[in-house]
Length: 130
Image (cartoon, rainbow, N blue to C red; front, top):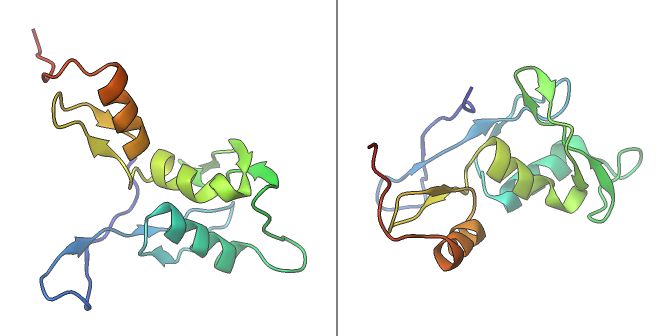
């Protein structure tokens, strides 16, 4: 099931540009807040401010932990560094940093994956359904 996404208009722009947002699904009991910035940095900021503290649940970039983003009612549980949670959620769960190859149309999860695809495997034409 795709993430709950809502369009929003940025009041600081002179033209109407839709911005995607998603409801937070971190932990067994998600905060339910709308995360407006779906970049890895924006998601990391939300996690630090809403789900970690300075006493019991301390954020440390080089500490390892389980991803607690819930999909279908179950947390992901992929183990990674805290510093990678935002990038992981953005690319794996929300697909907010995905991009399409202009030459062949392949969907890549991140810009670095697109560049690797173009350098190593792109054949330069869209696949056909033959």
